[in-house]
Image 1 (cartoon, rainbow, N blue to C red):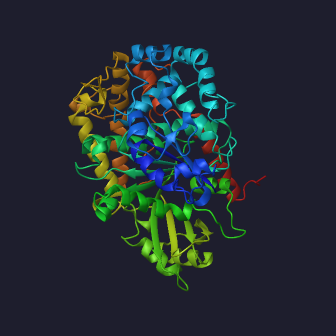
Image 2 (image 1 turned 60 degrees about the vertical axis):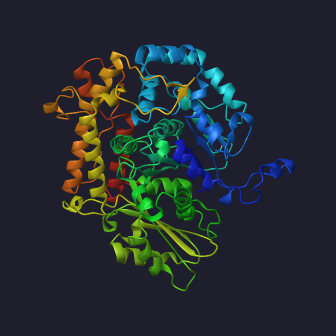
Image 3 (image 1 turned 30 degrees about the horizontal axis):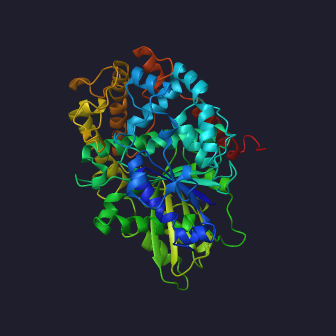
Length: 559
């Protein structure tokens, strides 16, 4: 599997830079003089999607502008919407959202709302179809993007243009990458809103088995954070849980969400973010590096099927990593180190995992990997899938444990468990929702980092229709009164239910996908009927799952 690395937002770009570093020519000038091809380790390719043009153009110096034919490159999807054009104007007038606002609103709901506005508002869809698609296709097509990409869903200029530039790197277009790895920060707020809309394009092209993973860094504990985020703990926790919720409840979404706890990285590296980013790159090398063992090149479709097989929602994958000097019979030592506190990149209960990928580099025996990991975790050997690659230097192992939690109703009380970490995250997010409801509608004191002509950036001013939609999204029909807070429906209710499931030892803990803007939902009764309404992806997955069960039971024969 050759992955296209798509970094989204500030943190995603910094980590993606580690994956795309040139292994042969460090000099851009020399590369241009010799007309050399840019080659990254493992021949991987990728792109950085950013919302803040100033950060992309003036602060960093690794990614070049896609519009200038550079590689590795950044792309600003918001630029496809011309300032003051009809689409820009009418979205702002009807909803109060500014689709040109780049990098200033640190909120996971902002891009989600914009995506759903384009997805639900027929008037805006007509305007986009008439005025935007041709211009958008031509603008990105001239830079190598596949201009023949079909629009099988509601036209959406920002997200459609982002997919067009990514598509060209993949086998779905003219490229060689047969999988995508999104890299984002859970807590920054600007990155994760791109992922599900882009996955929609992939699935709408009929590629249900095209592997798509999200590598997300969960925000650390406490009020201190990377100062570039301009965000306090409560706000970051709400952004993080909102982003994770959206990814884990999308029925036909990512094949898995690989989650790393930034608190663990801070404990290990302090505030040395470059070292932490280099470690993330090193940790992922067994998965993304080239040089598979001879005759052991796993089909990317098989990886996708194993990742989310039998599940109706995307799973969580917890990474465990170990690197040791070359030795004979290294399997047991590698696995024990990976399973130790030193090896875990997120707290979890490995014995509760229902499946494990094991990516190895070096001279390692697959049968011994299965035997040892089964002995250490009780995961059945048939639920362990080792993939070996040739390596240099140390033997390395990356274990991705699928949904390693649940079954223990007291786990949430124990430090170092997934249940404990998520219960804390949810509790802090709920406290922030309760204590700062004005911030949910951008009416509080926003810490925006953009200025024009020396003046603070213009504040968001949502319309009443948008405010009502957000109230319904967060609090349900009961509203945000203290006595009715999250009582029967809405995001606050779903978070409370998820925390209850975690405390009861249930999995999965997120169940129901939520929207801010619903198609033709005009009353509270409409909203109630839609909030738990399964979509076509849910139905298809349920049917597929039932068919597999009947085949396994011998009641019907497979094709």
